[in-house]
Image 1 (tube, rainbow, N blue to C red):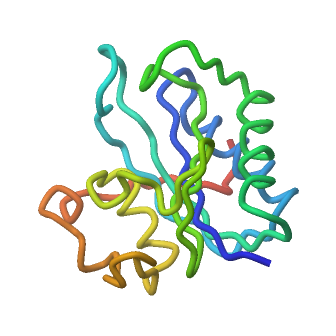
Image 2: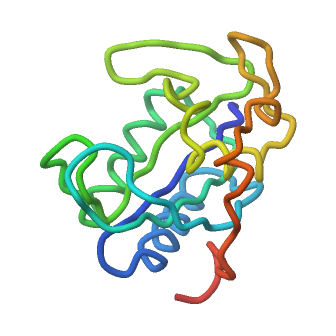
Length: 164
């Protein structure tokens, strides 16, 4: 059993509906312990595109990290994710941000997410759902990695598990 924070993002179509659908499907493969607020954030890198809705869920998962990655990618496909270009627009993006007490690097998965500390759209929701989370490499609590931009993010009045 592993404790994991999964980041969710969408910037195509009905962003809220995509996040909610992904959260519902995720709740069928893992136990969702907590859901973050939803934040609207500017895209990072890639071509010009619309703003993202971002959130995170803390889950417990019975299985290995790569099995979870496969399950997340299957959910992305079910919800219409097409991988045309790196950092391009997407209906849904599901990322393993952090696994409690674990650091790993393979050709398919790096945990914690390699740019977590420098991405407010991922760090802020992670701290919402796992305020006690510690970077397993540096042993620094993620709450101490907030910069001014991360601290300025304000939640939207939306619910990840609400009615779509």
